[in-house]
Image (cartoon, rainbow over all chains, first blue to last red; front, side):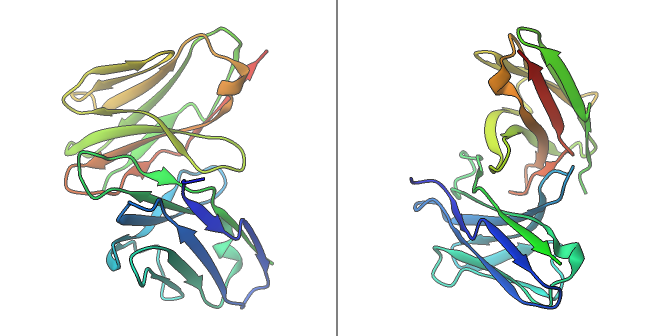
Length: 115
Length: 112
């Protein structure tokens, strides 16, 4: 399967714990995006990378959130000191840099439940 | 920033009927409008998109129309089938950004 993959698919944690999610984009895609989706809402942008550089962060990305893409391939999203309000689906997407190719390909998401 | 409104939130139709989902946007600089389909347990998948220099685009049973003056765009699905049942999201993106703003989604239910 050459699509975007995310791991884990589901994560249940207790409030105050740290969690880390991984995203593997489509191999030739140099742009990688993280979104958060809550029930009844569309995806909300968190941050994106072009290769290893983090180019934009949403105000939704509080200080407890950090994302990395160290080698310009896979990315990790870490949430420290989780809160119940962090419960959501975390989606990763990737795309080509070329503006002629606008499509973002989404992964299946990681569903986070904070108890 | 951009604001995208999507209606209806739920749409129930009989197999074979047509379905129409409507979206409005606020930023007149937006020039790219994708539509995504999200099935249960999966990420959104692009089904059709349209740029601001085009008024209509069609792909088999799916079509999208864009009215730049009124700042609204619509998704039309003809001859609906049960496998069309899913949540559909519209989005709008400005030319200077790679980040789309999504609507809140429409849950389409096609009854056999």
